[in-house]
Length: 283
Image (tube, rainbow, N blue to C red; front, side, top):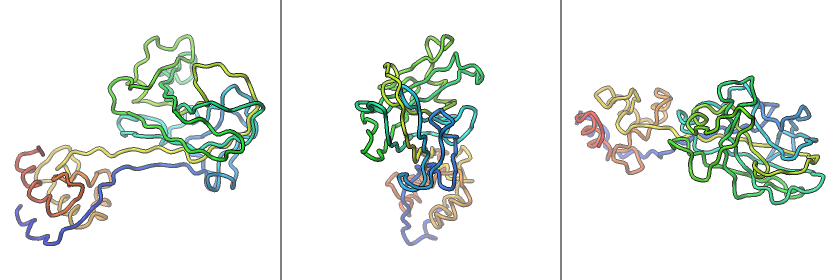
């Protein structure tokens, strides 16, 4: 195994960038996740977004707009957030017109659970976090929002609350139930515990996004769940040709080869990697 060090005489630098963001831009009429404001008036306009195409609903009669994914549609925005290590969600919003006022409404993110009964809305509930940035008012243009999602938290995180949507919602909803099975991603204009008057709204939605962070174990370069001799070929490939490594091991994270934990994959990882393999784990 020491021959690895002799084979690579030149230090190879690789950036540790394992976060991935999926963004729906609505280009070409695409609408992954079935985003809407809950009406049948919505359409995708080819121009006017942030930039380009965007989802436009010219008339939403509601007390609080709630852009959301469609019920029963599996997408990048739903499912097991913990398993995928979701770290953030985002969206761009614009208000073109409102009858009275949209002022002083912070945007809230909501993770919705159907409580295991997709056809019964009387037991649905949500975990939510109210942000500290207000939705834009007419004339202010587009505003971007990002919410951190603590998907690895074992309990309801600080700053998060739960809300029931029906009489049969669980009295003590469990954060773990929703974070491992998000049935709908929704945003809410304001505090969902408050009452607002009904108004007519002309609304825009663009660039809903989901950011995930690849999880990895140092030394398990072929991501088979163990640190052993079977990782050697993968380590050599990560060191010599990062692009080829990504192609051969698409579900792995090259950061697993950074066993020296200096932020790079290079010759300085060789001796620590050898030690990891010999021990069957990295310290």
